Length: 211
Length: 211
DNA sequence: CCATATTTGTGCATTTATACACAAGAGGCG
DNA sequence: CGCCTCTTGTGTATAAATGCACAAATATGG
Image (cartoon, rainbow over all chains, first blue to last red; front, side, top):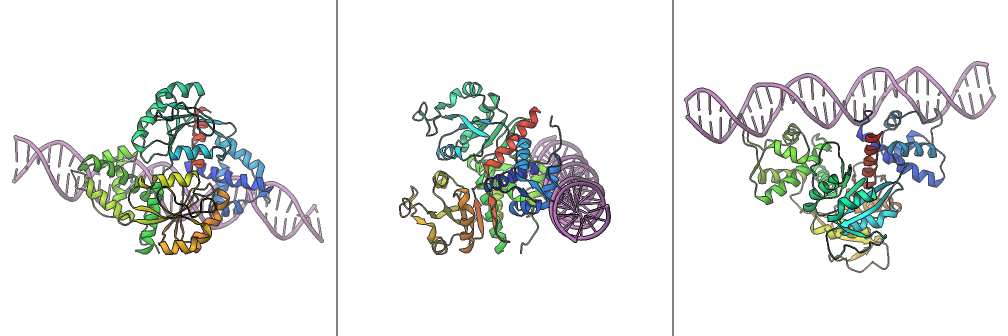
């Protein structure tokens, strides 16, 4: 189904480039060379040029890249020339933090629906204004609002069920914050945000450094 | 400095295995085969066996792995046979969520110090009991408490400075939640927890699926 | 005690990712 | 206009990760 064969690592790096380019753009910097960009992103300069080469030629030899132009192209490649509609499942501490970060999330994403199972929360409004729906209404609300990305911030024990309901509602992409490996059918895009795994990596590194 | 050449992807997978093994252990399951484990973790069975083979032979041919034993071994490999002392930098929405999850964090990690710059917060206690220190006292407190892992949950603009202070205090590992690439000297272990990058991956996948 | 059914551990081929190194272009300057 | 400097874009080598396929080892059952 996929048109071309782009390494997933490339997409991740493009996202990192775009973030730094955004800060450069705000600082008023006009031009950046792959060497500088590489240094700031902790990546090999040739890697950056190769990543970009998958999609076209965006630089000028002997000069570098125009910051605004490159940023625009990368956002276009990533699909950020539109606003993606997200649903949040679970308004606990983490979910609330995500909502609070909403303005802080880079432009391109918006929570259009929020869900919880707690009767004390349902029908109230979150600080950012959205009405909290009961999880039972998920399919209906998701379809009405045209949700494209589901964000799971439920307890681990509820995450798999939440995923299934999102899938049943026609959502094709899930951002999963629960520390569990979701079982989903072929064709679903799932990304896990998992700090326990990252912590384990750090623990391993520290253990090796000593031993 | 590193003793052996283990792929970082292997360490990440070990962490995922351990998490599922933990749930199996709680369910009372005694034995698991690599095929089942693989299916549940979304990983190739041979990959699992190869990952484990880096560190020894933990299974019984024709049978599988003893859940408790394998879990113990993996935790030992990862360095989770001790409790790691962490410091939290930034008690905003995200920081508070992390503290609230503290009990939920898999055993092996503990916040022994928390920091913020907001005078309204400093000297008060967080719900989990720790006194909030001012960032100015970071080096002193970090050394006193024997902090080993620094967790950065500050705004992006403050994250690099926070990292430098952690490094100056002798911390060798950083878990970074700020959406920025930290510049750190050789030998530091840094892991980024970055949902904006994950979201961009999802956006790209959705965009490709249609186009 | 042998045959059969399993499942691990691993050699090897394949695929994927990374990085070097240089030719190709672009601009500046005398 | 020709030379020099700079930085991109990319061919190619190197390295790393993945997955197949099978031998080795263990248990089971007659």
